[in-house]
Image 1 (cartoon, rainbow over the protein chains, first blue to last red):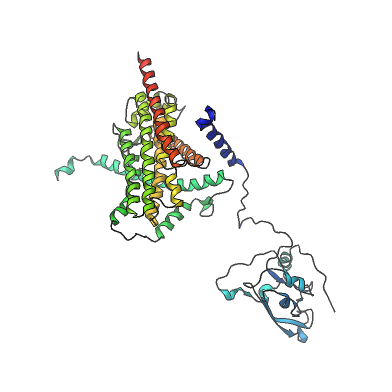
Image 2 (cartoon, each protein chain N blue to C red):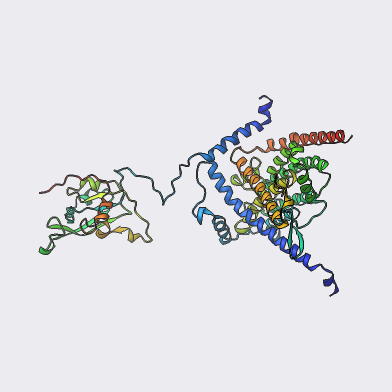
Length: 170
Length: 348
């Protein structure tokens, strides 16, 4: 080491200049929850039960999503649509009770891939926090997308920029 | 009853108010120094510091203090409870006592009296500061001993040896400064710097040595071995919890604040604002300008403490001792001899 290096002080001063310059650099911190990191469009978040454009629920309680779920998180009970309820459901059979246990769900998206009626898909939101375990079993009301005719903005927001899949109709 | 009539009650009142004011200002500044430390550390590391508690995170020290109060007071089961509680108390007392002789500003005019903003204008100002500083070692040693823990004792011993080694170089560099100023009283030093130049110009090497020793006295990086070891195996504040730990950590920040104030007073003119002639203003306004000037210098030195902390790695223990005894003391002696020689030559 030469004399200037042995002093250590010039090296320390150079280091201090470098540290000082970091004050003026842009910070990569994102101030959650005011700003949020953007997700990709195929992000697998919370489930949403879909409706068609007239507001009828797509789900026919066929049970394919419950069958394909590797964590056995989905349970449902089916019922037949009575004559006065045609505007509510797309086909005769509908899900009277539809529950997803969020604590069991692994957000794999297999239910979305298995559904033939484009009725369930995974959106971009996180599951919020609850105080009790049983509050994590989401029933149909919490999972349903808002009505497109009664509540168009909420419907549009929940739909996001999701690509509509082809629906199998018999 | 007669003795009460001979006490100068207004002076007692003004000193009491001044003491309460200075102590509370020291505590509040130390509190916000902890906050500033986290913010400055964050800014130097490309992130933003605490900004959730209150606007811009300004209530964060309050949250920290309240958290410390609510923690459980654990006192280990051994014989000397008195010493265990005495340790942090001593550290805090000696940290606050040094603030008594620093001139915080010029005279203030209240109720027809001239109140000088210095609690005790003793003519051995700097010597008093040094005496109290040496007593600060007791707080650490007692804390380490009373913890009844081998590692605490070792950590405390290292901290104590570091502090006393660097006190020597500090003292010798001060002797050179005293040769220039000719007085030990802090108030007179500030007055001299007002009419002449700042002592920094007369004693640059002395200032450098004093700065390095101040880093060592406050246990700041690169000399923060007592703190680093605490993270690894323990140290003098391992066994402490809740507010006693808070006192130790707080006393360190108060030490930083007081060291900055002393450096500003000794070498950078104290409450003198450069390029401003204070005689032109009313006494109260001049005092305010002086206090603001001193605070700006203190803030700069605090920023320097933090800036250096996040730039250099810490010294190994033997490197630390080598620096203190074999480099700084000869350098300080050399500085003293050169100063003496130059003064002798100029006075001929």
